[in-house]
Image 1: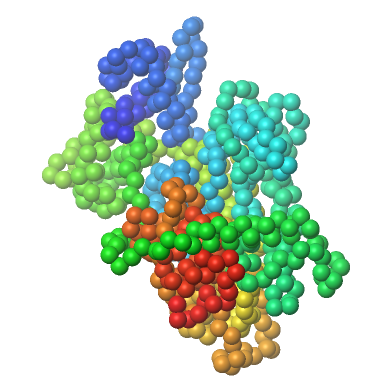
Image 2: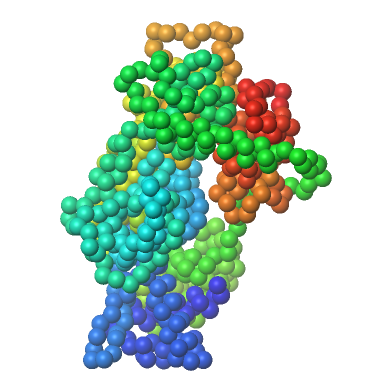
Length: 618
């Protein structure tokens, strides 16, 4: 988007914020040069509507009033200031914001942090990568909640029946790796809960929005889902009966295939009487495992893999995206605020503060100056230094947080709080954020995040005190005894992991929390030669995979976790073969292993021996 769009937005902000009673469309068109030069009235109307929507999304409150037949527009000044947030508050927001790593949500959070003048960081042992799984139409749901508009969507229920709905969204939440929303239709008295992965299309639509009543709590509705017993699949491996959770069916199927276990078709005689055995879950998981292995084998059979020795590899970092008009708008106001508060200040200091080039700072400040009249902005920029910066309040203050941005930040804080001990500072920070929203305190009851499992007390104590603990760790294929020093708690796709220093291996390792059991303090660790080597303790190796379909979820995972890229080919440093093979199997053939050949050979057969996957020579 061109800088002329930003210049026009700044001009509209200036005239509408400066007016106490509001301006008519004709007055606005006469004041803004680009509006005045529009080729037709219809073109002006379309551009003005887009600009109004942009200003709302940036956090400005656009107020309309009627005087006779004329509609007047003005911008209401923000009810609160983000300057009331402390350094600790900003640090927590920066840490929590790492939960959003993809899509529109990620860019919205980045823009919110930019408004607050902070950057995301990866410090502090309590930072938990509670990475939110991307869901279809999540942005539309949050937009409907923030703007209190009706959402129209097609929804498929658990029985496979699809119908169109027009719903007032009351809340949004995340648990078990799945996004949910709550809302009511015009004829309903109680809200319904919907899974976002069952939406087929969604868009904001015209209609009367029904506001949530005072007793509504998204947490209460989400808690009802989280309290439902987790479905389990019963397996047989080497004659031993065991079960695994089946919250994410594809992940469970991949683990079953890798473990070499078979799914029990009928209730076994040695299962405890109090345990639930669901015939439908067992049969559907058997079919899922068969379909998954057949799809992967079909991809790897027949054609020979290409020669990777001649490929040109590039280091794989986050894709560079061009700043859109909203992001550039936010940057300009941030530069202006810093220059106003610190003048005289060098352009170099401003550039270093915001990690941009000096040329970018100069262009931005000049763009602000030319977008407003002489009474609104006065800029003295000489010899690479801002000698003086004067501007009206709304042009020298960072843009306010929008309600959508506040919702994204609140969800990130709830995610952080789901794996942290209860802390007063998180609750206080939530209170400060909701006060910045026009919806106020009610907003805090409309979002919820519930972890699949909470961190046990011994782990919290070990993290806080930096203590070592003795554990028994089971991977599904082996059991080992470890002495670890926990460093960090993470949640990825709804499952908790512990990053720790393993004193036995003298290396850093990542452990799935569900596989850890605490060893009694009286129980001594066995000698090293008695300990079975677990797959995730083996030396790392390099793997190359090809992504066959563009824009898919598994291709995005490759882009996030690979080290190098060459077109459709991705190179990984694999420290945990189980994780890598789960990625390949759950793609149903979208991903093809090129190297190493031992893993490719396993994938090419529907009856391969999974225990050979973790041979240390691969």
